[in-house]
Length: 283
Image 1 (cartoon, rainbow, N blue to C red):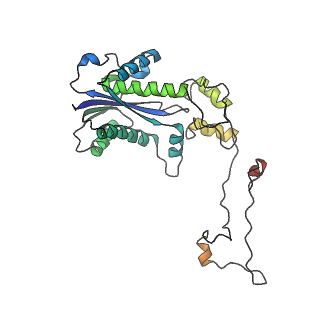
Image 2: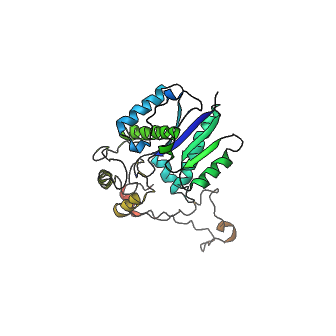
Image 3: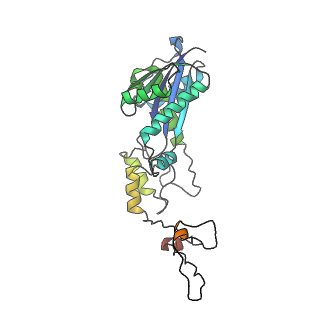
């Protein structure tokens, strides 16, 4: 097929609730301009009704393609809270590259790709050029690219509308969780009064905290958990003497103490923390 121009942008980078969504849109470089909506703009500057209208146009025009990559709050949390944190900028860059690969793998040749930057634009552009060296793609990475380039604006609309629909119709994976106030959490941004109220009212469990709709790696969530949750101290059990596969390195270099009869004394298991007993979680 003909080479295309492509644009990439995200929605939901800052909220403490819900997913971050990356969207991309593309069409042939020499496509008839009359079939491309001429009122694309940064989706955040458009009304919800206008974004919905534009997304319907994107879906209805055969000459326009689009891609979506959803990063759920649970994915963001476990990535940022692991021992070696996988930060949001790295996740953003990788999401953009995944969408570019998806388009290339579909047999589409990309002439130019416009990307709304995350981090330093020059460094990000160099990273993309190295990653896709040999594919003949010209990358344009800029701040506010979604307001300057129609494909990027279209990608912004795809991302924003997708996220809005997902959050408005969110089904909680925790079967017993019923949020106080339903899904009336506003924009999901920490500064939104509705979001603040929802977070304050819905600390559902003192250990497990919130449903996986929440980003546990965000500072407001950490603060709420520190104030309203239970402090846990995780301790490894001693080795089980009856399991020959579970042995520590010390077992090979430190002699075990024996009783006066010459028989080896079994180790006692460390007592569980009291909170486990209270919840009936003791084996």
